[in-house]
Length: 178
Image 1 (tube, rainbow, N blue to C red):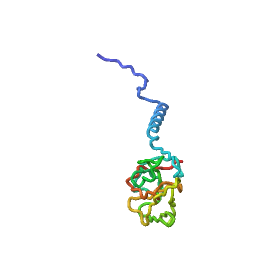
Image 2: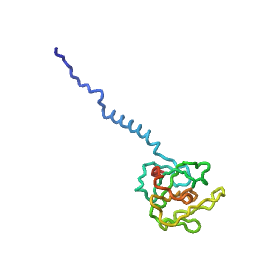
Image 3: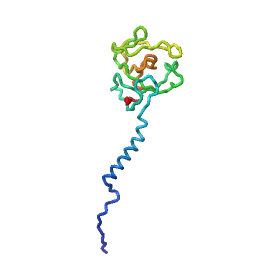
Image 4: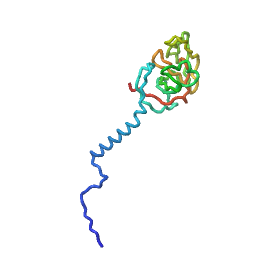
């Protein structure tokens, strides 16, 4: 028994016009951005930096350079004097790399820190509540896989007080957007 098939100019149901393809691609891109972008945007609420909005990307330890913004958790006994309202155990900080391994870090009289003979900041003796601050003391080359982290505000809580951050502690690199 022979069957007769009628050929039509009808397109298969999966065929999309150029306009429909564009709409689908825009919707898929919006869904992708809407689900991944919010977890990559960081807003710094501290006054310790001159930038406020950052885009978080993976950090490659071998590519860390002076001036990079990096994220790391705040934990350990050396931070106890600073744990207060707004800063808690495991709080994530964003700081700028002031010195990299091998750089010459010096602490001069008056608490002035220099990296490669360029001043990076001065440690305060007391905080805004009058509490005496522990000041990091070091003179010499920065050890391997250690970084001296700085805020851009003179009152920033950074390596001037807690010392080096080990390269394994970095969570991500933060690219400044604004």
